Image (cartoon, rainbow, N blue to C red; front, side):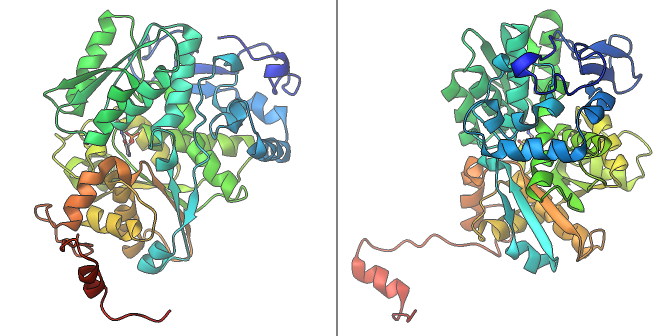
Length: 457
Ligand code: F0G
């Protein structure tokens, strides 16, 4: 990969020493062997483990004092065109600093709202709770942040085929970004009957080769990794470290939105564990560069039916836990063998965090509570909300700590679950907060009778 220079490289001139040397490289998460960041390499050549993108933090720290970094990112908030309009590429010197700007594929993404949640503050007796609504991204989930970096890098490499296995959202994002690159083929593998109709519609609409397999997500990913060993396909699941570089901007936006004062906790739903790893890595780098002076703690939450990391945490991480993932309304995190397991454990422990789990009842109650406050979230996001409520009740999170919960996708992607809950059709779940559909005859008087006596307002 070429270094960014001249007009394109805001870092050029500001960096110290050999400004032409790449700022980023790959490093194995297990044996620390390093490799240049170019090519389709996805695993360490020495030991086969996952790779991280690592940046030259010394050069980045020397490039600008923290105040100047903050000013640069604040100035870009008003950008009207160019990649800096994106909530990912606004931080591009910290994301993929060597990527030529002309290779960027951006819709743009990010810039999602950080909602204050009086409903959650009241329900949990906590002073400050916010929801970072990643469902406000172009394809309605946080995956767009990783796909703008992943597909931009794919374009930079000139690959012919990109692919992913997915519980739905990754495939929607990959297909939508890939369709912007002329000639780039996109293959997505989905577990049959385990993604919502809205999610299934997205890669179909974008023109991806959409394949449904009679297995679960873990099975789809295994098969795709096998195919990638024999064919020159660029794999864009979150084992791909370039994707995580985009996803870490969720943490950057949260901190910037809070005036560069990090919250005490960031709560994230966990499936394949790429996102919590990315957020943790990004915040750590931010602290190394001096943009923040302490790390928020991380709470990763899984659905009880698919909670290997929550169990590992309870057992003090004594051994690596894998489970067969059972059915859950949080279908996007129905994963028993998270690909970024080790990365996530590393980041959560570094951030003095924890993993927890939530039951179906807790997930659906939490969803109904947040939905009814006008912020429509998906069941996966609600898993994080439920985990927060439990952590608050159990005392892990204190009443005066500032909490941000990441809602990872929009409620509109899972309308069936919402309707089934409100109509009392989810087995084993008490729809205590149900807002039932009222069916009456098509007649104005009937509507008036339903409203009851006229109210003064
Ligand atoms: N929330 C939603 C809405 C998701 O779609 C996912 C993952 C997660 C949370 C968990 O993120 O895997 O990084 O821990 N969905 C992937 C997919 C697996 O294929 O769309 P993670």
